[in-house]
Image (cartoon, rainbow, N blue to C red; front, side, top):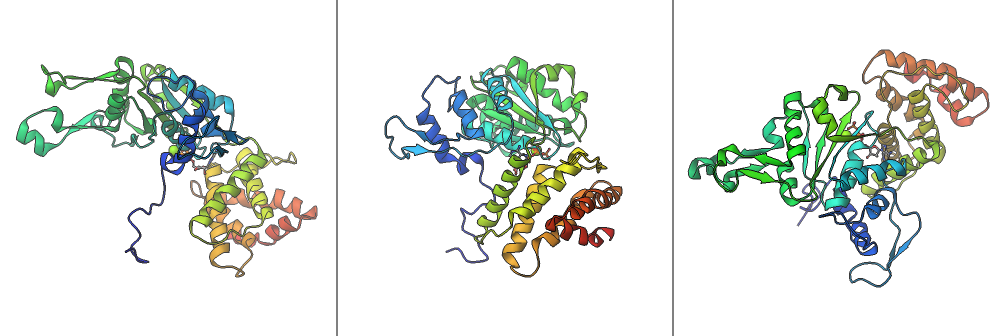
Length: 386
Ligand SMILES: Nc1ncnc2c1ncn2[C@@H]1O[C@H](COP(=O)(O)OP(=O)(O)OP(=O)(O)O)[C@@H](O)[C@H]1O
Ligand SMILES: [Mg+2]
């Protein structure tokens, strides 16, 4: 039996989207029975609906056992529908998809959602690092079996990419530009010839592993890491690039931050109790500092670090958890400047001064215009002086 210190075996911190949204995926497979690209679980249109949400309730034409008759598909990725459609078309054409953008713009999340919807798993993943080797993109060996039996298909340990090739699935390569160029180039032959040679098995039937229909790759690249421009021209040509930007709409960003902060608190079994005005101010500050211009049109000195939506979500979640675990101790708004300071100065200590100048310009002006929330923040200026 699970005790307080020993969680149940099934407890997980994060559920991959194919598990978290299993019901939605099964429903969409039954709802849209149109033609699908080879090996796809859903139609391209249903994949877009899965990622963007259905808005209205969808109703099955006839009852299907184990599925609800009607379901609203929740919105997950907040952004341009056209971008998601282009991503889906790229994958349907079995071309590689490269999602590039600033940190924290949901590139990884989008790649997981797409992979889960297209082939039922987002788990065939290689995390690109400076230490990634070609083996991790191709195959390795089980040395005990290799020594006992010599090279054989059984002793071969496939990489997630090789598994995706043989099963016609989508493999994900995170942060591809962090891999060394010669390692990245292993992907060139794989994407053009759609097979991997296994010289150790030369002469046998397994000397070549061929990609099954449906196989493709989604890679992500962070613009703050080593440049996408340094990728070889040959590799670039094998990918369709899509740039994922920050969320354009203020209200959409606030709604997302609220949804995710609420989910973070509800996971712990406590009640969510953060006032909407706090989230409003938090998202406004992130957007002002990110764009260098306030909604009122004032110029704002931008910190050099990125203030992403992902970080807005994590600050909002911390505030919500503080409110849940220390109810009544302190106004959650009073915690905001400290959190903002932490986010702002993570790359460059000089960004702390930029945050202070944001306080002296925008926060002060709003406080003078009579907003009680901004006045409270102005009164907390001392927190930033450290
Ligand atoms: N447009 C968006 N739609 C939905 N969620 C978003 C969006 N932008 C940011 N988020 C939030 O940011 C979180 C982190 O996103 P993710 O890790 O996928 O970003 P990333 O672009 O891969 O970042 P990095 O470049 O640092 O790897 C998401 O789980 C979500 O909470
Ligand atoms: Mg990522």
